[in-house]
Length: 178
Image 1: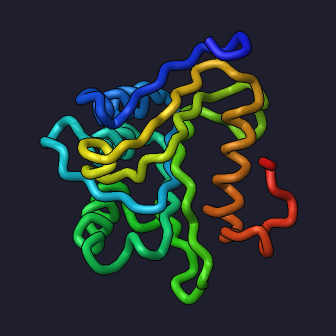
Image 2 (image 1 turned 90 degrees about the horizontal axis):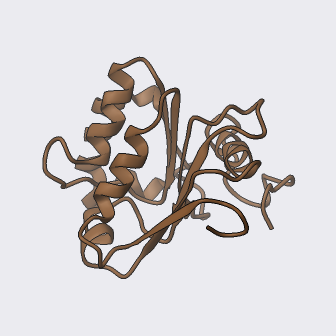
């Protein structure tokens, strides 16, 4: 508990790191919003974030993903294409490919309603959504189950990128975080 808020944390040195995030995403009943610098998923079938996101799309729930432009090229291209196939290209927003800016967020919001300040849960941390980040790098993620306003603010930040296509401070004068 942090300041009266129920929390749990996982370190990438913990073999259950990926499983904790998959469980968190699987707990959603309405929506999942994932913002990450990169997304690649080499976990066994049935135990991956990609599988969890795809299950929500199949169930008719809202799934949205925001990624940095680097996620669409080079070593990440095959994973990006697998993500597009799994959740639909219209559910992914990529930072402007001609921008020099970098979208480096790493958070997941589940079941947050942009109109309800107290709804939703957030997972946030330092890890990219990649196999090396979950298995061999020293990263962390914090899952916050109950903290009125936190999921709301992360949802506003997410929607500013997804719907508004605003990824930098220059284009986002009303930052939700300091």
